[in-house]
Amino acid sequence: MKRWAVLLLSVVVVATLDGCSQRPAHVLQVEDNKWLPEPGYSWIDPKDPAKGVSWTEGTTHRDDPHIVAAAVEGNWVPADGYVWNSDGDMSKGVHWQPGIKSSGFPNVFAAADADHWVPGDGYRWRSDSPTEMRVDWNPGQASQTYAHIAASPTEGSWLPQPGYAWSTPGQLSAGVWTPGVRHPLYSHVTAAQTEGYWDADPGYTFSITDSLASAIWTPGRPSPSYANLVAGADEGRWVPAQGYRFANTDPNDFTVIASDDGSSGFDKFMRVAVPVVAAIVANSYAQPQSNDSAFQRGFIRPAAAAVRDESVKEAIRQAQ
Image (tube, rainbow, N blue to C red):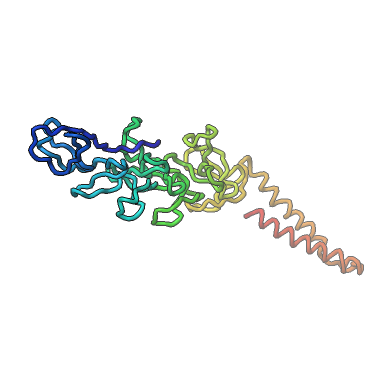
């Protein structure tokens, strides 16, 4: 919201000098026995013009309301928000300069429209009054200068918005979306690969759609990093999926391997027994006989020996 410029307008008081033997300095005659102060001056006592006039800092020039009396008598400066058209040349006048900092109100700057003002980046008007020119730091307010940067709780400092990091580390700069960055307000939530989207941590799901505050631990949810590993009943604990077991006892190693389903030992027995029996039968056929034909010696016996050897290897693998 913009605010109108606030100017201290000089009030011109025309006075008579009846009974005054000498005209005071810095007054101008406007008609017979009618006088007014020169620009920059005002009557010391309007009821007693004989007391003369004094230089009044901040009063506007009679010919240009955007030029005001300076602190030093006889000097003039542009009104707040204005600059000289020609450096220091009062005759060339002044113009409104958008972006210039107010000389009377901290953290307030000239708006694009003449005689209007806007709060500095990170600030807001203290009240909704159209004449209010005071501002306060507003934590969380988005920066107007740097994309995806917001005012921090400490006045004058800034932080990247959730999901963003500094584009130039260690320096005030625009924010860039950074997948994996943790949300500063919601637990178990991190920035997703797609800008503006969020993921629940492994083992968690959003119980309410579009609610980042609803991330909950979800037993049975598969791990995105380890095959056949799922969320356990206790929050934060991972367990092998059905039919699997941990490869070792290292609590930091989540590698799992296939295991018995636990119903009985019969299945494992059969997985070992079948190749053993096959090996025994194949071995009997692999033994050469004195009356073997050329076909038996060249094909049958070698094939049976190969089946025997592979069956032994399979039995060993199943027994481990």
